[in-house]
Length: 506
Image: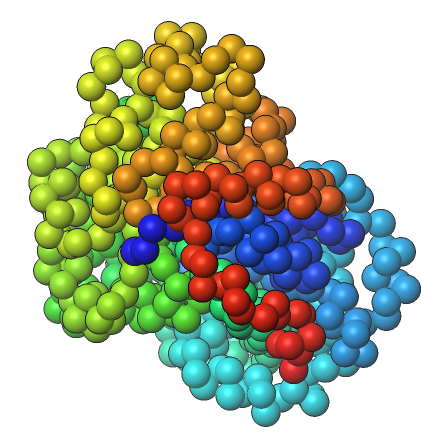
């Protein structure tokens, strides 16, 4: 990767009038902000459809897109929705109210389907033909609605186990509902492709974060159970998690079914090839969350209440990585190699050639010998001020270990009267790491009120939204100066003509 920098900004955190960030005007304006700030990368969190808990790391499909991100104003402009009714719906202000947004979004998307499906049928059919996963996803979502929102493993046995006669019966009975969900996916990818094209014209590339595991209640596990460690009735024998670490003394019990890597190897990791191919169409760079699980993974017996009683199992290792690289020459992948690392994980990362991650907030653990200290970096890594799972830098300053903060001040030479957040960012920008990325909250100097996620907790995560106008010219100018000062600016765009939204209109 070239020497550059970027910003983590979840799509749901964008400002706007409709309760949650979308692919609408505010997304294009954020691309403009990134360009004016001299940034190369916009890193987004996983963009799949979420279920209870609203975590983007627990999606109903690893292939599908989140309908909440569809811009309804664009649909109104196409005559598919009534603009006045859209504005009067009472979306609310501030952080995401998921219950309200899900209810309203579904209502308006169904109106758009009623008005627009027949006219778009040929394009939708073409989209479906190019995306082999989408019919199974449509059927899965239709069935989930039919069974009152229950997970697939609580459905009637015949369809739970995908008996062919049951699949045919429900496919006929739920045809309209299946078409609705396929149409919504068509809208999602149509709008995303347009935004991605705009970003590309302005020199901005997307880093897309993909979770290593699929959710138990997902179209992926229901449609292809042979890829997972399940018994004949569809129950997992063991589930995923991580042992006790920096984030949690009990470890993290994720609950995802584990892959049957032996079965996957026999067909050349076909499911993963299709997944990487799909992600590569969405993003320019793929960040694989929990990369260390490819070397060895924490297997927790099904039914455990915490992750403490798990054990390590061998992952697919370099054979899997070489298969991916063979299918996708030149693919750009960031390996999230955080957590408990072993010599085996370090060796796998080295042999893969992928850049790993260095998080500045982990560098000052009082040992003064942390691998995350910038003077220990090699170029082929990505330095993060913090990720979505970390405190913001401001929160770290205010609530972190005083000894760690004191060491950080000494290491970076931060005076008591200096802006601590910008000084830490400056330390990352100045590092030898090819890439530096931090959260938008860090540039805004926001504290605990703007935290994206606290690992191991539920109920108050994935809600933060940036206020309209917060990413202004003054902040962009400050970021631009730092980006140029530390050699992360692409001067070729100084001569490029600014692309506008109209340049990518259909």
